[in-house]
Image 1: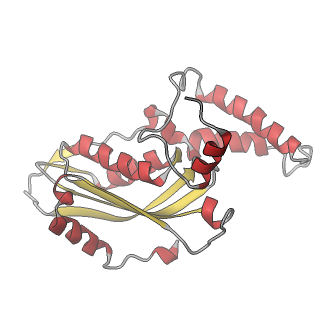
Image 2 (image 1 turned 135 degrees about the vertical axis):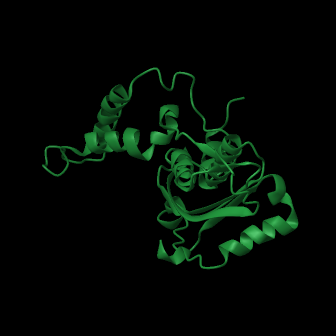
Image 3 (image 1 turned 30 degrees about the vertical axis):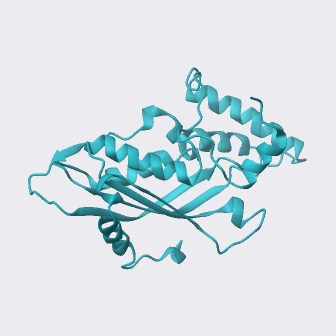
Amino acid sequence: MKISEDRIDEIGENHVGTSAKTPLRDDAFDITDKEKIERIQESVKDILITLGMDLEDDSLKGTPKRVAKAFVNELFMGLNPENKPSASTFDNNYNYGEMLVEKNIVVYSTCEHHLLPIVGRAHVAYISNGKVIGLSKMNRIVEYFAKRPQVQERLTMQVVQAMQEALGTQDVACVIDAKHLCVNSRGIKDIESSTVTAEFGGKFKNKETKQEFLDYLKMDTDFQSL
């Protein structure tokens, strides 16, 4: 069923996602990154010219290529499955049985509705069922799924699902607190508000375990430093 223009605007203005998976076409990787950069470069050039910018100015000459390279190699590198971090796990030989929490993982993402930044912190926790994962891998998993056009709810779910897959356990949780520049710098222009999302799996659905995780986050978290 074809969606109306009014409905499209409503979804975008209210920051509503339409899929739990990143919406990708089947031919998303039929062309190389180099070809994508070349195509995006021309598109950005056309946008700037349409806006009235003088691309002969020394400051602007390289902007279309810089933007194209940033899109493919940095801001949206998480779209390419070849960039997915290898989530190496190890045997829990020291039999650590309590939850492990990685706090204050920096999140830099991009809102898929207006292509404006999402900036915040992620807090990821798991309880080992025999396997542990390297601490830096948790940061890399967050980064990988953040580096794509996103909605925060989906990002939170994707981080948990990737951790569950890597560790072979449902006992994973993630909380993200982030500012959306599509809210802070346009539209309502509320510079103080932030968005908090959470996904709890396995034992973290238990009230006591969930509260223990949330108590960890209250210890010294300071989102104002972003």
